[in-house]
Structure formats: structure tokens, C-alpha cells
Length: 192
Image 1: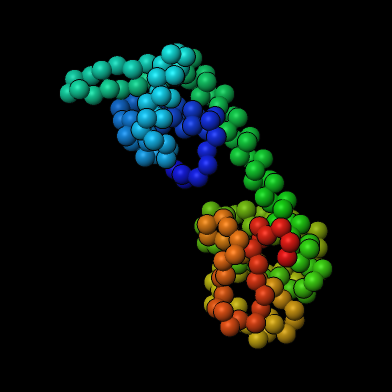
Image 2: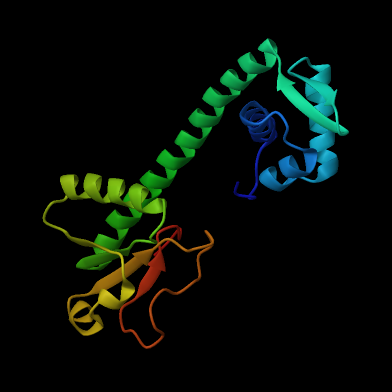
């Protein structure tokens, strides 16, 4: 589980989901999977027990198991839908932002080279690429998986820019060698 900022609803969803998947999960394991402190996990579990979403049983060998109640299963289903909707909205906003960045860059550059990060974000970039190519089939746009495949001399001659998604989500990183003459920018920068 990515330990980036998670909302209160996400915390509940993640814990309900983990308990549903494995009843004998410990509070420490929940803490590790969610990035929450052990104390926070304990408080959330106690709240869920009070709210009737889960029940706790002590089993031999001084172990505790947590089980979702019927009310907990219904709440998990509701939170799953909310979680998917919320995250889908964020993905669509990101795709729109990238699409507009491509439009802005094509006002200044003849060719855009999009460096794929080589992870699950490749699908998002490929979707935007396909939509953009459908709208602007004559514009020079290229997806690149390996930055070594970029020919700096050829690309610099035709006013190119390399766009990328920063590995940690923060702009300011460079993806090409410092002596590369091609400008580069994050697809998440507000202004290029």
C-alpha cells in the first residue's frame, strides 16, 4: 500500500478490505499495510467494533481475529464504490491536465517526446496519447520508454521537448543527461 496522504474514508476502507481478506491480520500488519500508526489502527478498530462493522474474537495462543459483520460488509461495499469514484475522478483530472499540457507545448514546440515511466502510469499516458492523436493526428508526438533512445541532435533540430512524469510525483527532476540540448519538463508542471 502506498503510504501517501490517505483520507479518513480511505483508512476505513483499507482496514475493512484487509480484514475481509484476512481475519487473522494483526494490528501491526494493518499499521504496516496502511502507513498508519499502531495507535491509530487500534482506535479505528475500536470505533468499528462500537459501530458494529467488525467483531473481535480471542482465539487460542493469545491471538485476536477480526470479522466483518453483515453491517461491516455493507459498509465495505459502500466505501468501495466511494473509493473507486473518488480515485477515478483524480485519474480523469490528471489525464485532462496532461492533455492540456500537450496542447500548450505544441504551441511552442514542433515535436513532443513523452518519456514513459515504465510503471502503471504508462497506461494513463498511453490513454492520453491516444486521445490526443485522435484529435491532432498531424502533430508530432512520440512515446518513449528508454531515454537512451532519444537522439538529442535530431530532436533539437526540430524544436522538441521531452515531457515526463516525475518518479516521486514532484516536478523539478531531470530525466536526461545535463548536457542534452533538448528542453525537458514534467507533465505535471503548471506552466511549461
